[in-house]
Length: 212
Image 1 (cartoon, rainbow, N blue to C red):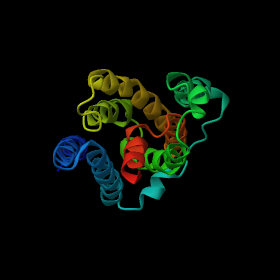
Image 2 (cartoon, helix red, strand yellow; image 1 turned 180 degrees about the vertical axis):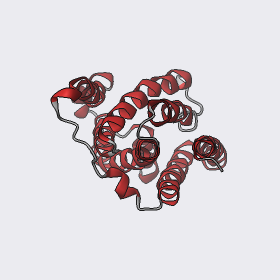
Image 3 (cartoon, one colour; image 1 turned 60 degrees about the horizontal axis):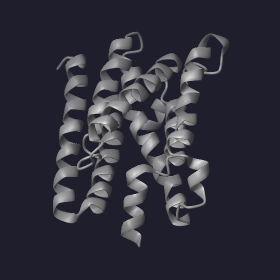
């Protein structure tokens, strides 16, 4: 099988399989449990596929090949930083911090970190390492499928389309960052911090409801 064909089949398989898991788990076990099962399946899928295709631990895909914070990367750094700062305004993190349950805030830290690193190892690390000289295959292709994946965790939401489309520019920024550094390290860091500032999104709120 050609490598490019493989890297189309992989994300299609991920998108369709996770969509099915989210749908049926939510239908049979409820929204909160469905979200947790869907996300755990997704994280395992990302890490396992990355290790099998890359032939090494996913941690290898986090090894920086080129520095991010150099003068020539000023525009990449600016975009990268925007992915960390934007949740502060979108979710009014500072204003809502005092009204959010302490348990939810505490859950957001590990869950957002797990999510950020598992996602970035696959969507950025694996693609950039496989196609280090092709922005189309290293950045554009995974960004489109990354956006499509979000149909799964947003099932049933009235803002589903808006949420899915909003993840496309995020994927492109992360992709550009990984492409310049040849690594998923800095995108994983930004993804995790942004997730924490967004209070862990649906996954943290779902686990919080289940634990209550």
